[in-house]
Structure formats: C-alpha cells, structure tokens
Length: 213
Image (cartoon, rainbow, N blue to C red; front, side, top):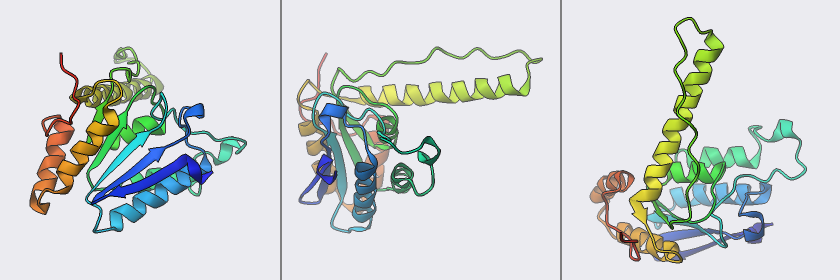
C-alpha cells in the first residue's frame, strides 16, 4: 500500500512521511520496499542536499509489520526490510528525523542513523538494566550474553542522547526538523560534513520551536 509512504521535495530538501498511524506507522512490505527505493534515489540525486523523515499520528515508527509472511523470510536478503536496512547503511546525506510517541525496531534504527532527531517530549524508550559482568569462571555463552547486553545498553544510551539533543515542544517536531534541514541544505559543500558531525554531537543549530527548560 504505497499510499502509506508520502514524499515531497521543498527545494533541496526531500521529505518522507510515514502515513499509517492506525498501525503505529509499522512498516509493511510495500512501505519498506518503497522507503528503500526513495533512499537510493535521493542518495544519487545531486539536487537533494538533505532529507527529513517524519510520521503522521501519535507514534513515529513501531517497527516492522510482517503480516502473513513466514518467519523464515523476515530477514531474508530479498525481504523488503533487509533491502531498507541495506539502503539506510550507506546513506550519507544529512538525515533529520521528526519524532514523537513510540519507536521500536526499524524506528530505532532510523534514530540511530539520523544526524539529528527533533523529538517531542513524549518519545522516551525504556532503558534495559545495566548488565552484570560474569565471573572469570563463567562459560562462553554467559560472556557472549553479557557483551550483547552491554552493546544493547550502549545503543539505548545513544538513542536517549539523540532524543535529548534537539528537543521540541509538542506539535512542533516536524516544523523544527524542516527548519534544520533547510539550514543544512544551503550550506557550502565543504561545511556540510562538519555540520553533520556537530548535529550528531548535538551542537549544531537548534531547530525552531525548541523546548526550553
């Protein structure tokens, strides 16, 4: 159902909107496939300087909706969600997210990939407890489980930091993300990479509508 993915361009800024609010904007096969196609196209388009991803409704993206697809095919190389991940990894243009509500699965992957996340206060994923290091006598399985839990905790801390770096008042995340993307889009090419680094650190220009203490 391609109408669940809506796109437009404003000058040099490409905008992709998830429009499946009744299902928490979870990505079904058609949405994931189309999402991947747009990322590939925008990466190759010299007229696109920055991209914004936003969503309709109360939630940003609650993950993947596999429908009736057999579980053995969920992560198959040809699966649309796999193609989306493969398109997202090399995407090297400034990516700004407008987020609110819940995020899970691919929604969290998008947050991790983004250079800036303009987030409303209601977006607050839970943190898992800090893992306890096993003793030196612990088996290899326990050691691997500890490393996996520690890595998950590190990713969750990164996500939490991103959600706090560009806060927005309720109802203003999209406006703020667009303003930030347009500011980046007009920068000289030699300044874009530095600005992308600053945004990841949370030290870039603040979006309009930023929340204040």
